[in-house]
Image (cartoon, rainbow, N blue to C red; front, side, top):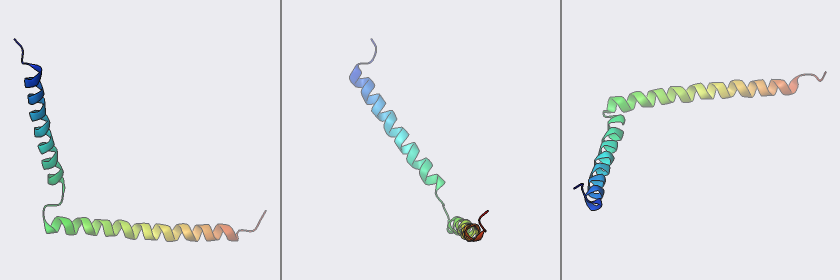
Length: 72
């Protein structure tokens, strides 16, 4: 006869626990693993921040110039 509901439930719980462990391992493997990787990511983030600052300044300049246009 097929496994009882209790046995099926226990198997499912074991499989879910194994999946949780795999998810944790996958998440950890995606994190930087060396100081060099952290430094590289920080440099990329800083570059992105610098680009955003530049873009913000451009947008502020455009908005100020729009306010100075003569009315038609």
